[in-house]
Amino acid sequence: MAGPADVDQITIDRLPVHRDDARGAVTPVEISRFEPFQQARLFYAFDVPENGVRGRHANRTGREYLICQKGRVRLDLADRRKERSVTLSEGDGVLIEPGIFVVDTYLASGTVVLVLCDKPYDPADYIHTLAELRAD
Amino acid sequence: MAGPADVDQITIDRLPVHRDDARGAVTPVEISRFEPFQQARLFYAFDVPENGVRGRHANRTGREYLICQKGRVRLDLADRRKERSVTLSEGDGVLIEPGIFVVDTYLASGTVVLVLCDKPYDPADYIHTLAELRAD
Image (cartoon, rainbow over all chains, first blue to last red; front, side, top):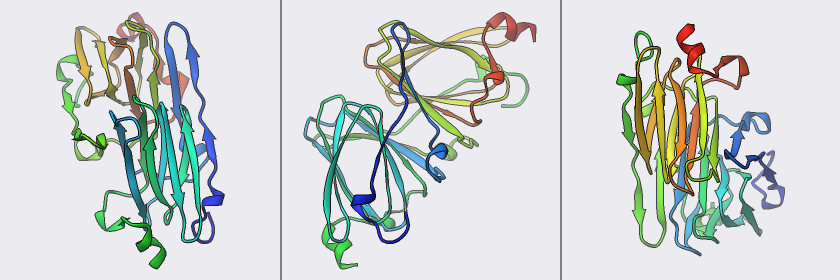
């Protein structure tokens, strides 16, 4: 994404889900096919109570690719000037650029969210309030 | 793992699960901390019926790191001479070296398994029967 982070430039990717009655479903994630993204680590969140909230941060330099593996999660997104909300359902993925503040609300119990990160963990890369992002 | 693939050398890693009543659970996976593993792609399987079976293959050269994100999965493992079964519960991870034949039985509905692979997808890397593995 060229220029400053812009919530209006965020698009949701519909990942493939290969289903079979006997064997269930599988989703391959070959992120390099649709984004220039070098993954350094990953984490996943689960067992979040319905309407439980995670996230609440922006990254200064790190990019994150969020995948809703199960359930439904709403992302309340903000850049330096605007806000926007998107809801991810099963099989939806979204790239979050640096400078986008994200609050994740888990809409359904059993929701599992996988997050791929392109930088090693660094607490100094996190911006924990929207005020700080907008004052930067 | 030096030498030929050996089911007896397989160990289960207990991944960290950070839990919080309000925010649920998160598991960071920084595989490079405990294995020399370069991830090329990933996939995840879900909505598998109870006692449904996936897998049934060995890789010729690719390594896979399986993580049981939710539920429980039994891995029936075989090398060229021996068999062994292990069961993964939530938060368990296991490295599968090339030459290990794996049959995954999903023991609980709602089980979600994440698989990290160190090679791009290549159908020619798959061995689909134990007979073929042992004849190799």
